[in-house]
Image (cartoon, rainbow, N blue to C red; front, side, top):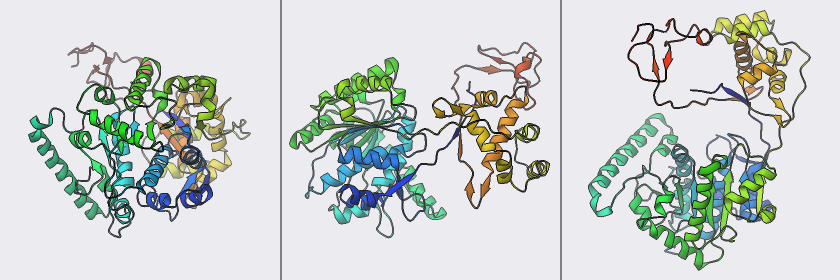
Length: 499
């Protein structure tokens, strides 16, 4: 049903330069900085947004040096910017030459392994490409002023995109769907105004007449969006006539100018393994062939991201085979971008306060009295002092250490590394993590931590309604249990007689 929780120390990524500084350093038009700061980078309440080392390198290698990139930094490291920035940079460059009209074509396709990820990233795209602001500093305002009102069109093309079927036969469904989206948009506008939070506007499609988001299939079939997010529909699109114009228009756009680049973005690359990965790899070859391209074509650029791909010979073999490039030419065409590993640490010399952490970690609800009791028992004024006095961060780093440096581990492995045993082992780890999460001084926390929870959706699971069912095995009994014995097959009555 679930894996043990996994604990990770979030590394502090080094900030290298602002985007404006990047443009000056690398000879890139400052229009990139101007446009990006209208939407994509307006989110941290900071006067300036700095690029991390890997974001700087990704933009330089992809946009300036024209290499394929694979970004393998950790979760939450800003990998989305690593592929969005090069794509936007090319749009800014090409759009300088757009006159009153421009060629419609699919300049970028983004593949996500799950539709849920595509939905989440739509919020980012709306902020980056489709924002209007009262002070005229939104992305659409910038395009009105600097690109004659042109738009960088984008859309999500998945199984839930309205509406399937022949256009002339589903007009009623299309009008109904449009009405629902217009209602959602008005509700979002009211909520944003009431809560003084414009972020709420980006959770639904913008239904204004000058919107850059294409929300229905027929609009995208008639006029290809510049950027399209897709996953499950690609195979179907390549086999039928409905979407043929998207590919033919894109092929024509590529043939018009050798400087035109088709960007193929693969998010969560590590998920495309085994048989499923082979199928997707061949599907990408069919896509490129449909566009008149091949994997070694100078007019295609691969931009990929993965949180769990290491740079080694095995990875190079995988990437070469997946993208269809010559393995011997891999290093000249691809750049794998990662952060240096966090070095392992030796076992601390101070003993862990196991008894106190066990008691504190066993409490499931926040309790001020428990906080005070812990501090008194350890003779500390605050949690920051506790962490320093007992070297709790060093203990956690020691438990997460490996031959590859500090890595994420589940709580069972952490407990083993700490030499803990018995029922209290989980509570000690929980107490350790809780104290570190509260170790703050002057607004700065000792170490940012992240917990990962993996659950499996089980189809078919039945449970006794009595949490004190006598047939529960001893190893699965705990005081907070709210259900009895579990069964993998349907039954109306438990062995204990309860329903």
